[in-house]
Length: 314
Image (cartoon, rainbow, N blue to C red; front, side, top):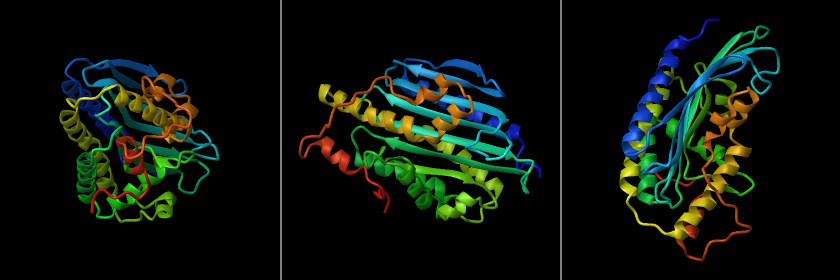
């Protein structure tokens, strides 16, 4: 069975996306530039890690491109197989607690299993989610409306299904709270639908060409969304109380990424480059024992919004 796409076309798009996003973020920051670190993976492939630090707006951020291949780990296949994966993953930790943390990932993965009837399978995955330190309801509505409009171009059920998937995925189980205000998340999306799609109820008749266009649309919408949020919030005044809350919430972010994040697990289990994989962690974070915000405070209000099923678009 042949692949639905030429790998080179997908890889070329992901490399171009990394270039575009890095250039746009440098302009939005206005001070620092990304530093590139090219790496080679033992076993096959490699990537370009780009990190920006100590800027006007961005305290630490990374935009990674990877193209890796080789023997498939057990998490991908219980029988001998080979895999090929490519994508762009980014996390931005702003200096100001008034500018939200953001994460975006778009990826393509193929699996060749000689003993399987299908022999070759491939799918797309990705998502984008927002983690404010303080929830600005206008920003949350703008973020979700923009994602919904992007999803609606391809199928009317994409946004509600992928939003629910994000609520379920970006969930810190041991805290019983979502990582942030969600966004969209999707995985194992293919044509015809994969078993995971059917399990999630995502079984629309959307062809391969449209799925690739959808993944590109999600990648391309990141920059206008985030540069808008930077411009709107970077000048807001904050003090030590807000900085301490930021460090506390960054701790929650780190907990999710180290315990639950599939990308982190996949990267480490496929002998990926640890520095690039753990780039998503914040530069500083705090853990306070049994911390409870003051009654009726902005912090308490924010925590009340970190629930599954919170609707921002009616």
